[in-house]
Amino acid sequence: MKKIVNLWITTALGIALMSSCGNSSNSKFDDTPAKGEITVAVDESFQPVIAAEKSAFEQTYKYTKINLVYKPDLEAVTMLLNSKARMAVVARELTDTEKKVFDEEKIKYRSYKFAQDALALITNPANKDTLITVQELGAVMKGEKKKWSEVGKKGSGEEIVLVFDNASSSNLTYLMQKFGIDKKDKISFFAMKSNKEVIAYVKSHKNALGVIGVNWISDGDDPAALNFIKGINVMSVADKVNPSNEDYYQPFGYNVALKKYPLLREIKLILKEAHLGLGTGFLNYMCMDQGQLIAYKQGLIPLTRSVNIRMVKMGE
Image 1 (cartoon, rainbow, N blue to C red):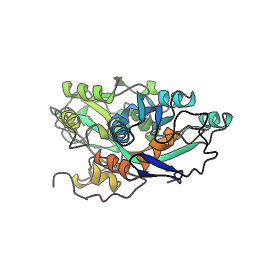
Image 2 (image 1 turned 180 degrees about the horizontal axis):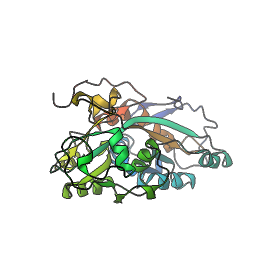
Image 3 (image 1 turned 60 degrees about the vertical axis):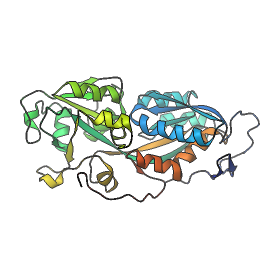
Image 4 (image 1 turned 120 degrees about the vertical axis):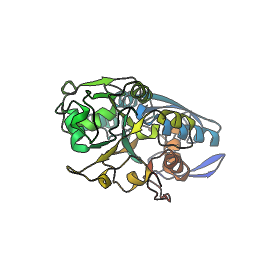
């Protein structure tokens, strides 16, 4: 990971400032790493984990307020570039064109890996097929396989209905890039308004194949996550053409940590801040011990701090 700016949290009431990114004077700004109010634009796929980070940070630093705005990937980045958000939480780096905005405003481009995420494929319990290969998923995306009987081992003759959280979804973009699909109109899918709506749709449609961020269903202590996972099946995915049962993996801690599950991506924290402000404070909190433990509890794999992960397979 890129070196995080030198900002170390020393007490629950303050932060010792040691900046390596320019002038540390905040005289013309009304926020500091431990005080003030900012907006953070978040890819809606990552809502549960970033909401948990915000809550813990504000409880620790009483004079801070982090306003989270949940948007599709492109809209979150647009808010950042237009200075309507201090930070964007997305699943990609900015393009060269997007980075030019930083150069024009003489702000250093800073992007940090936060956590390893996974896409979860979910189905209705009435659908007895819980296995799919990466190759079969690609064929479904491309319209080459249209019925459940054409994938997995127990599929019915019903048509597969692909469901994403948004037409501009990073979940959709990830799979398009993975399978070399250049235009959305080549894919037949339903676009909802959130991962939460995808889950609700799958619960009420037995032929649906929903695509969501795994942190919506991976925190076993969160009542909301437990409620979401009731009434759905999480598919196991294999990255082999002719797999055995042992080649299929689910998108949870053990398989994500060892990179056995094939649909993985990284969550990025992209900061647009010309001074040592609250954006820097919140970013460092998420990338240091407490923030990384929160990410781990949410079912993600920390990328900036080592966490002792108990390697237990699902079902044991």
